Image: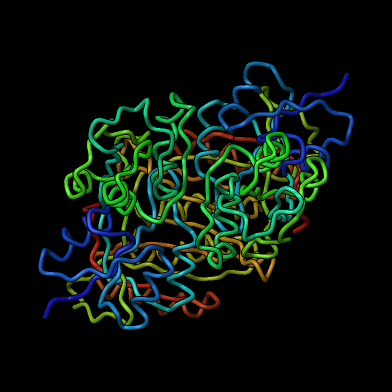
Length: 276
Length: 276
C-alpha cells in the first residue's frame, strides 16, 4: 500500500519535492495549506508521515514549528536538506512591468526581499503556499499577479518564468524534518542523530554542564537554540541537535541528562542526512 | 541639542514607543521603512542612535537583524523589553465584515495569525510598518482595509479599534536593541551585559569548552543561537548574550575567548534591562 505523506503546500511545492526525493514517487499526498493543518493530518491518521520545513539559512530556525512538534508530541523520523530555488512566474505574455502583486508563502517572500527592492510598485501578499498561487493564477487567468515558486510549478501550471533564481542567498539550503505520530522504530544502525529539548534553570554554568556531558559521551552538537519559556521567566528551553557514531554513547548521554535537566524530551532519533 | 533616533516605522509604531521610553520625549525621529534603511541612517550619520527589534517570543531571534549588525560593524549600546499589543483598526463605521485586506509588518501578521483563522476572507498583506498603514488608511480614506497597530496609532490617525489585543500570545515581549555607529563609551559601572559573536570549528566539545570558560569567569548565559556559516560548511557561528556582576570577570573571559575562538567579536556591552 502506498504511504500517504502530508506536505505543506500542493503539488509542485518544495515540500512535494522533498516528499519525492525522500520517499520516491510511489506515494499519495495530503496537501495541507498550513503547518497546523499538516500536524492535524498526521495526528488524526489522515497521513502516515508529514514533511515540515524546520530551519533555513536566512531566517534561522522556524521556532513556531518546533513548538508544534513539541506541543503535539509527534516524532522526528528523518531529515532532508534541500537547496531552495525561487522563480518569479506569471501568465504567458505578462512582463514584470505588468505585475502589481506577488503572492507567496511568507518564507519565500522573506527570502526574495532584496529582489523586490527594485520593483517598489509590486505589492507582496502573504499566501498559504508557493505552488498553490501558481495554480490559482492559471485557473483564474489572473493578470497582474505573479507567484514565487519552483520550476516544477511553472511547468505544471503552464506559467512563464519572468525571473529565475530570485532568492537573496543563492545557496539557500532549507532543512526539512520527516514526522510521524508514533515513536519510530528505526534500527539502531540507522540512527546517528537526535533532536532534543530540555529545560534548565537560569543558573550559572547549567548549560555548560550539560554540554560537557554531551562532549564526554562523544556527542557532536550541530545546532543549539535557546528559547525563553513564556509562562516561567528565567527558565530557558533549549532545542539541540546532536550527531554520534555509536548508539551506546547516545543512550549513555541521555540517561545522564535525564537526571540533570528538567523535562528532557527526545523529539526524534534518525539518520543524519549530511556527512559531518 | 536633541538626539536623533532612527526607528523602524513611523510615529505611533512600537519602535517609536521604545524610543520614547528609552530616551524620553526630547528627541527627533528619523522614520525608516525597513531595517536596512535604519542601519543606513545610522552609518551615514543621519541619526545618533537606532532602535531595532531583535527577538520576540513567537518567532525567536530575528536572524537577519543580527546579520545586519554584524555586517555593518555597528554597536549595541543598550536594550529594551516591550510587551507588544496588537490592535485591529479601520476607519470609523467599518465593521470586521467590511474588511477584505489587512496590511501590516510581517512580524505583526505572524503574531496575529491565529486571530485571522476565523476570517478566511481577509487577505494578509505585508507592509513596511504597522503605524504607516494606519496613517495611510486615514489619509486615503481606505475602506475595506484594516491595520494592525498600537493604540497610539489609532489615536494619532483617528481610527476605530475593531478588535483589541489580537496577538496570539498575550504576553508577547519583544526585545529591542539600541544601536550606535561608534563604539559606545559606557562607564564600567553601567555595564553588566554583553552580546558576542564567535565562530567555532565543528569539533566535538568546542562549544562546551567556551561555555566552561564563561561559567568559570562567572558569566551567565541569557541567550544562545547557533547559525551555520553559509560559505564555510561545518563551521558554526554563535550569537551569545551574557550577564555578569563584575566587569573584570567579563574582561577576563574575553581575553581567554579571544585566544580560544576564531573571530570573536563584541557586538556591544551595556546595561541589562531585566533584573535576573
